[in-house]
Image (cartoon, rainbow, N blue to C red):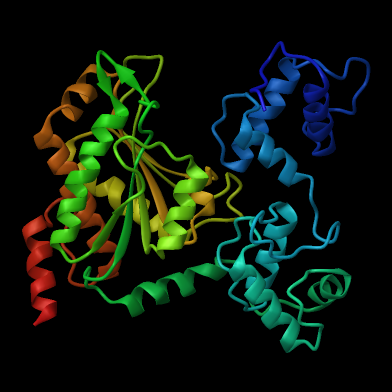
Amino acid sequence: MRVLRRGDEGPAVAEVRSTLAALGLLPPVNGVTDQFDHAVEHAVRAFQQHRGLITDGLIGPATYRALRDATYQLGGRPLAYLVSAPITGDDVATLQERLLELGYDAGRANGVFGAQTEAALRNFQRDYGLTVDGICGPETIRALRQLSPRARGGRPVLLREQERVRRSGPRLTGKRIVIDPGHGAHDTGVSVDGVNESELMWDLARRLEGRMVATGMEALLSRGPDQCPDESARAQFANEAGADLVLSLHSDANASPLAQGLACFHFGSGNGTATSTLGEAMAGLIQRELTKRTGLRDCGTHPKTWELLRLTRCPAVRIEIGYLSNTEDRTRLTDPAFRDVVAEGIVVAVKRLYLLGENDQPTGSFTFADVLAHELAKAE
């Protein structure tokens, strides 16, 4: 679909207006129904902020998908696992949240009906004497609504994710990490004064790959130098590879040349109802480690529902390293020695995640040599 913005009109705009009105973000439609005016843009921005999307006021593929998903409520349609075209929607997210509250491991409540959600649903149906078909139909909906949850409040996924990390142990050897250098091929990403984001991130990815392999990790690149898969394809690659972690590397740009700094993003809705707890932890570790080592301005960590973060089954973090539109950040990023510092800081942050706070050191003081020594000591 084409991107819709203020000033556009037509049937597609009418559909967006109708959806926003149904969600309570616009007053009931009266008079003109097919114009993208200021009120629609304001409503779109509010919706995007609430859903963890980029708040640009535009209706692109991600926002349109989120609007469509928001129209579904649990019980309005049967839900099942379709391998070729997985069902998505708020009804799926509600089902996942309900199963998690009842003690069934449906994975992350990301609104995508996948194999893990089906397995949890089948276990629920088996335990409660329902037809075990993996389909969330009227009978299953009634049972879900009648039962009281075993746990309410907090983050049902947190303990499971922490236990998986604990069981995997503190060693990096054998951990499978997907490194995702942003953009690629014809898509150069941000480009300023001949400096291209895609080329810088490819170089950084290779530096990071080398360090990870040296520690015993299995590092996989999501693309080649002349490839540019979309975010869903990158997520699919990570899922099929059985990745333990995905690290997506990017740089940013802004109309203001004064904008600068580092930010990390993990899966999570803007309203806080769904999140990746390990992704959030990993984002925080990377953010603290890199700001301490590089001196880049700390722009914080943020939850988003971008495709790569939402569709990966493992924790995923998108790292926006500096603004190429800022002279100071651009100068730093074009220095190979600076990219080495960034690569080392990311490896150390990953090590911290698996240490779970044990035998740790103050932020910025843990070196790559320390990581190697720790791996060798654990191997003996």
